[in-house]
Amino acid sequence: MLLISILALFSFVQVHAEPPFACDFEDGTMCEMENSLWFDPQRPIHNFSLISGELVPDKEIAPSKDHTYNTSSGHFAYWHQPFDSPHTNMDGCLSTPIFELTEHMCLTIAYYIKSVRADRNGTVLSIYMKGCGFRPLWSIRTDDTLGWQTDEIPLVGHGCNVTIWFNIMADQKNSVSVALDDISVDICARYKTTTTPQPTPSRSIRFTNNISLLAIVFLVNTNYLITS
Ligand SMILES: *[C@@H]1O[C@H](CO)[C@@H](O)[C@H](O)[C@H]1NC(C)=O
Ligand SMILES: *[C@@H]1O[C@H](CO)[C@@H](O)[C@H](O)[C@H]1NC(C)=O
Ligand SMILES: *[C@@H]1O[C@H](CO)[C@@H](O)[C@H](O)[C@H]1NC(C)=O
Ligand SMILES: *[C@@H]1O[C@H](CO)[C@@H](O)[C@H](O)[C@H]1NC(C)=O
Ligand SMILES: *[C@@H]1O[C@H](CO)[C@@H](O)[C@H](O)[C@H]1NC(C)=O
Image (cartoon, rainbow, N blue to C red; front, side, top):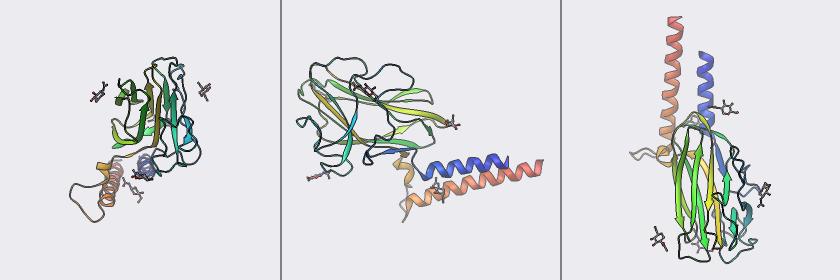
């Protein structure tokens, strides 16, 4: 019992100390993200690749700067569909490595979509999670996001291993660019702050969480020792 409690406490502290997934694409890799899904044999028509604004070939519709640094040398994950390319229900697909989902987690992303023809809302970017069930998390249908946009998406469920993936379906009669940057899974912003403002709100609530967990572990162990 004591061992289990210590292990539980250890994993709690560990998980909260470091985000389960974070990628700003600045270390020259895609952080083990894959252009596919481990449970789906289908492959996307076009791959995401790592690039920067100054090196991107399709300058007309690609981002000229990244989201992390707002510079032409900063990196992002880039997907491009030329006009009249083939089309499936998985024109593009990028999935995260599997990680263990804990409570109060959110996915934050920066996303960018731009098309040559902007009269049809023909591109759909969707985000799904598998593990803790299978669920659609988020979706946008547009031709143009007017630059980088960001969002924070709550991840419901905890205590299971999950993967998150980005799926693109694009109108084949269009040339489309999609870019992703600053993808991370971490404690949701609203759990990082308390409702009543304090000098160091994020620290105080986290400290309280740890104290209450310690108290529970202590009580459970005490109870175990007394009853056994
Ligand atoms: C996408 O990447 C995968 C894995 O690296 C590769 O096998 C596949 O050929 C690529 N597909 C395209 C269309 O480049
Ligand atoms: C990015 O940099 C440009 C100038 O190079 C500036 O006009 C723009 O406001 C910056 N964008 C953000 C989001 O900081
Ligand atoms: C695209 O979607 C936006 C937001 O839903 C809407 O306001 C706009 O009219 C749509 N444009 C076209 C061409 O369908
Ligand atoms: C998640 O995967 C890791 C590594 O395979 C494993 O040790 C862990 O027990 C799994 N967690 C759950 C909740 O299945
Ligand atoms: C619990 O305490 C550890 C070490 O002091 C800290 O790193 C961690 O972020 C805390 N957990 C929470 C949920 O605040």
